[in-house]
Length: 501
Image (tube, rainbow, N blue to C red; front, side):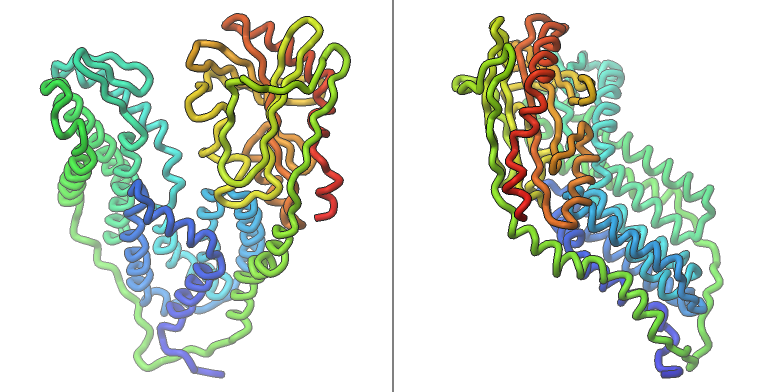
């Protein structure tokens, strides 16, 4: 088995391991594909980022060839741990987290087989994929708020009188909304990707790379401000009839951003430093030791292979949830039919939903809603941005807090509906009999528990009307109800039927 592979064996090994990761962790690959092909175009640049990452790996082939393979046991251990974490995130339906782990898994697989010297070389090509993941959406809200504030300052400077109401820029003759798509997050992501690439091509120092990222990122944000400002001015001067206001703002934004980006790259670019390229001597070859590659492949694929072969099979045995509304106790009478209620939660994916009301002897009313999933998976999760505890239009969340009642905690929401009525809502997540007030922790716990079969998942919510803006009396009502009925309500899911799964 000696001297069987050519000089660029390390590059071939790296490519093979990356390809195996792409295939083995297919839920992440599929999620990336959906993000890149989604009609909202937020991830369309992924079709440029991925080929550039592949080219960067090819560009590093000579440096990889000069690395002496030194398999890392530490990397193998980290790879297995990250594989387990990926499995938990996937089962929990936390797409952003399992996508963020995909490049890490690729890098650790290469490190396991070739060592840390190779890891430093492949780190940038593999890490470049992070510019094509949906996690950048975390900047949408801050950038949206920043853009709105900037318009409140800049618009009067060009003679457009405006005042800001939330995300609305209100002018005397019209209103322009700075929506999520106007935040400039896509411009920022693409700009940072170009700046990072420029720094790599220059083999720049960390200081210069940081400068490139800061300058190009700042220009991306400013170019988006200019776009929105031009649209506001066009709307003001044409009484909202300009094509930029109605349908041309998206294309205009990208044309403007492309011009700004090209100009900044031309200005910032310098002749790349001469980099000594290490090439292996022609005609040489290096001995191959199969166990090191087998170990890397085993660490990469074993955990998901077990999951696909065994754990996922348990999902088909998940039984529907049974719900028994508890009988009223103490001063509380019920359960009563909630007919006529305006409360209409909307949750995505197949699930069960129950709605009842209880009334106290003093005339106070509490509504209880339970939303249950016998099985969670991507696109049908208890915690999902597509879910609404109040329905799409009926109510607007105003304030969220956490309250503690005895030894139990609840998420508190003060909401107002379209008729101006304020409501106090307390809710809690129940994952297989364990309660959570943190959506993230509830999903992570689901991911862990689901490794032995899917636990049931329920969100319980209780609401009562506020008699004043402070909702103090409503808090007293919910406290009285949950002190009396809370344990009964949380035990109303039929756990016995679930025990057979």
